[in-house]
Length: 175
Image (tube, rainbow, N blue to C red; front, side, top):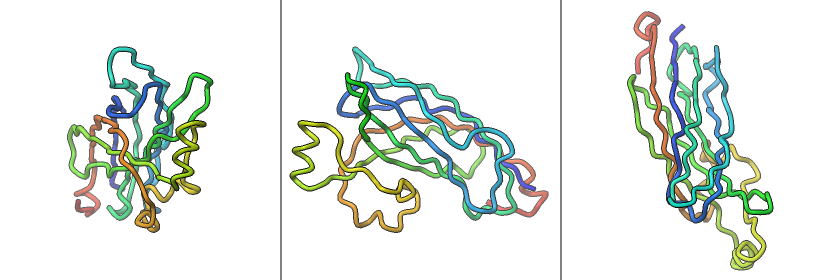
């Protein structure tokens, strides 16, 4: 079977409205894909930069897939959270991007967004924290009902991923 190795890291995040953020991530692939080794999901540590607006995570990603075709090519989905001084966590942004189909090293900037509620929700969020969240995080990368959401842009998550393709020509899989 054809093999795809994804090796890299979630490097940092920038342009978020406040500090003390962390990221939950996952890699979603279609039904014809099987994980041989590695983790499909994880979470970074909380970074609270004092002098810069960039949170550095340098969180590793290392996963090995096998597949019979390119349908359902992997994509990475992200959820960025803010942790306040009381330890409460609120969603700061959702995002996803496709894993590159070409071999080599790739720098990826994933723009994030979050749902915006009514004016009452926004006032409550300002004074009490929290805010609207997605009931099903699958909406982030499936997109079936995403067009109905009112959203606002948040920050950007920076990743460096290396993609290695193996045996694609041997098994007749074309990218």
